[in-house]
Length: 162
Image 1 (spheres, rainbow, N blue to C red):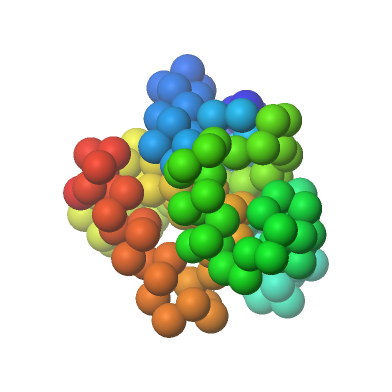
Image 2 (image 1 turned 90 degrees about the vertical axis):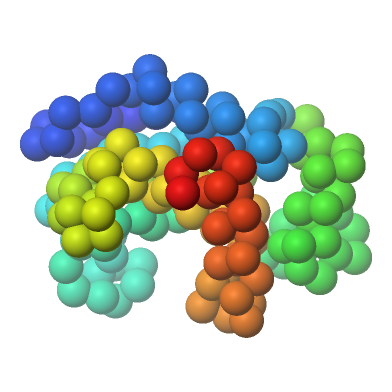
């Protein structure tokens, strides 16, 4: 589901919803419920402060429906890593009606990053959606020794983002 809760950056919700479905197909999580909300920099800054204790807006935040421990226990018993869970989902698909969680993206911030990185806004938003979904699946680039980055770059190529 795509929700546009901001007014400063024009978005094509239908195209973004279609891309979210592509991500879910590629990751074999078509059954999973994922919501993406596009929010203002002001709203994102408030959430960034509340949840990460960081000042100012960020481009993307992910809010998993389950904790890492709950993901490991309830979705794939005895799984210790996002990679193991991802492999299992690739073989069998996500559990029926699994709720992965919500992603918040700040298009104003994304537009600035897109310009800095030499990308279109549309590509930047898609990259952020992919990044957010990987976080919802349990990947964490801050603690996984590059595992999430490797998977994300592979998926970017497959999805035509690089």
